[in-house]
Length: 111
Image (cartoon, rainbow, N blue to C red; front, top):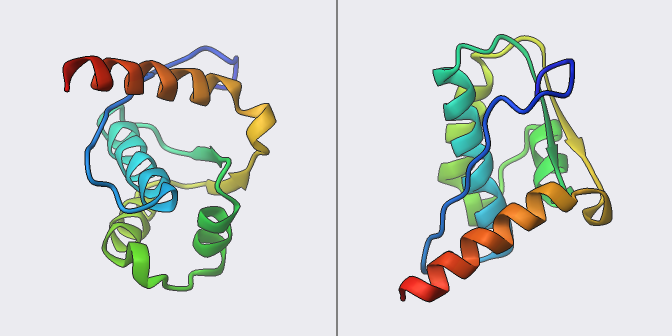
């Protein structure tokens, strides 16, 4: 969303064989940063309901489970100024969850 709350881009994808919810969140964040780059956005506020992912990104620590994707995110993050990673409780993240459920139902219907 932009500063006025207007949605600039929305998307979802389904992947089979993702090892964990944390990996799914990391993959989604990486794709969101790629899309923001395509849209030539300068600064970003990133919101996620994955407290572990947000804490890891804020601290700059590595996490073996998502190391490669985390490195991609950190490289993409250098393209935005300012950039912040923010935790949002799951109950306050209804837009993202409805989009994820929609994507999952399409994936299940295809398989």
